[in-house]
Image 1: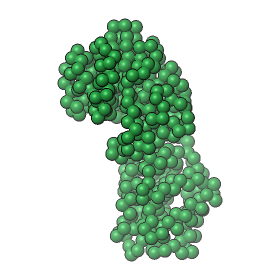
Image 2: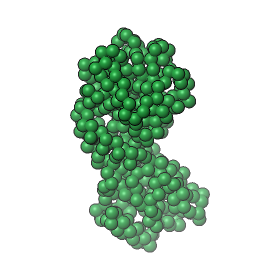
Image 3: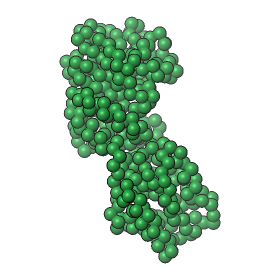
Image 4: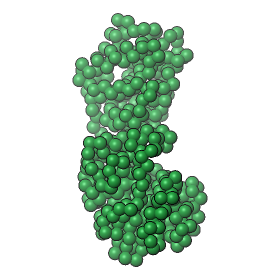
Length: 388
């Protein structure tokens, strides 16, 4: 347990050995699960708790501080933040869970928490700890519908739950404001927050209006210089685009790779950055980061039987659910005897809904006519991007 300020303690834990989050997101550094103990003159509150797999050391840390816990604030019911609640309620029989109404429902359904131990709070409601006031701010869809923030009023500390988080374990407590942290926060935003960009923009405005002294998220470091992370979020949630094309591809016999190489050079000659990613063994987080400011994605894919390679379909599905501010997509590739490369990929875009720029599909290996078509495709992409 580390003191952040008088009567405010960090009681989170590092999990550097975890390789995947949600069995999907790669964790190059592992992650942290952040929990905070706030002591007033009369009462104590835990703000968020712990992943159940680290329950033992977490509960030992809380017990070592002594005295009772009066409130357990659950900003969000996902088990990496709420997994310790059932055990804590047994250990502290007078403790009450404070959370949003939707979070109360989730805690009952997901963790079997006794509803009589939960008090759902309203937007703007305040609870006094004695000389310290906790104010609750409903923030639905950042990133679950149950999310809320907790504002410690007198100290002007904002406990932002997953918002402003990072899977980052290089520091013990306060943000080092390094390029490495910025990249980790960007990766986290792209994988967790980007599907809710509009809501993130809304609550960024709220956070900036509060001008908090510290931002204390549920993953990653504490920001004692909050402008660092808020400035990064302002860039990511904006409507601005780079002159960039993201190009995920998979090529079975090099024909599609030759097309990708040629298109990349054609785009670069027009001043367009190309972020290409071979999908075999690709890091989904790297692709997600590139999508933050990309107006266009081009899939390069070989044909498998009568449709695009499954890796390409998976990439399209993943991009769709991440909902970047994508405007355009296209497909290039090689096939053997028939079928469609673009139709199954287009069918994946049910949420993002980018406009299709007709691409280039060739039977067999690319030849002179193919390369002329790729030049024309590059020109169409350039025209679309330049008009934004």
